[in-house]
Image 1: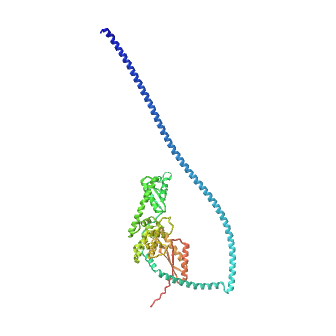
Image 2: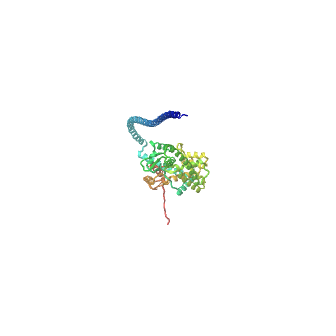
Image 3: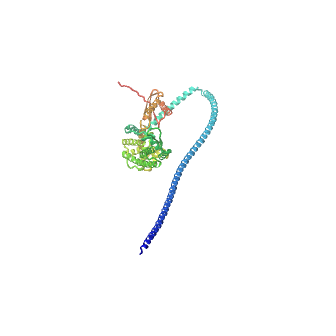
Length: 520
């Protein structure tokens, strides 16, 4: 080929190739720039969408939080409104009650004024009638003196002589009746003498109270026990039936209630809640129910252990449960279970001395106060309630009679019933068994002896049987048989008027004449 052509063609081709390459490169660059712009725009658009989405979510979260706070605020406001409404209603009721009481007081004042006026009128009428009656009596006495030919002093003397003879006759008849009755009841009296001699079986009794004290680690715990607006303490009192007293006593909370079983449930429950630390209404109900169940099982064990201790068997499980419940009952401050165990021992010892069945005697002594374990909603004397309960579970007839008759609600049919009654009296009457301070006990005996000594003709007085009997020794030359009976009645009347005492006090007047001579 011609070099000239080659020289022309090659540069032209090269130039053409360069031009084509430049065009292609320019186009590719434009495409890349366009693609990059599209990607950048897409990224910006996605970022804007994401930012709008995040903004929307945050707004929703803020809105939800605001609604939640608003709801809480509304609830609190409503609660306060309800509380204020309740308080307003209570105040309104109190105002109404005060108004009613004020009206009632005014009415009573008017009635009292009217009654006073009536009383004054009646008193004036009575005084007038009394004066008329006095004049009529004087006039009648004058007529009688004229008709009988006797003065009033002579008539009194004659009447006193006749009454003295009649009193002597009545006294002799009364003494004869007492002696006849003493022969019939000699066996019972002998049993009482034996009872008085066996006080060696007396045991200590725990004096029950109406409060229990729960120790806490710090006064901070008092706030947790009370709870927010008192909800915890209200839930606790509702679940246990016991009042919780949170006062200034350091590191202590007081539980108050007369039911010893409920108070024991409350004490154990509160101690567990304090140890656990979780104190709220649901937890309180859970712990109280659990403690009640555990104490129910403990009651059965206590009844079983008591029967084992006394050597008794064949007792129905329900009766056994009531025996265990005696641990949480008291009578005049005397623990009922300890009292019943003591009565059981006393009755068993007396029965052994007299040749009766000791097993029946001990069982009767243990179950004599069974009726006191029943719920207070059941009405009736505890002796008869215990009789019905024991009869329901087929106890022995002798045991049933002893339970029902130990307070003479029914007639005694067996000597074991008399033994139970005597043992019950000894266990309850001895000093210190029941809640009575020693000083008060001694003071009562001194007052009893002082009342009897104040009568003329009394030589010595002795208060015995823990103040349930007073023996009065009179001077035989100043007090005769007829006056002894009257003296006993006068002393008993004065004791009733001036003293306060449980049960009854027997007054025994003793007149003894001794004649002594010496043979030399």
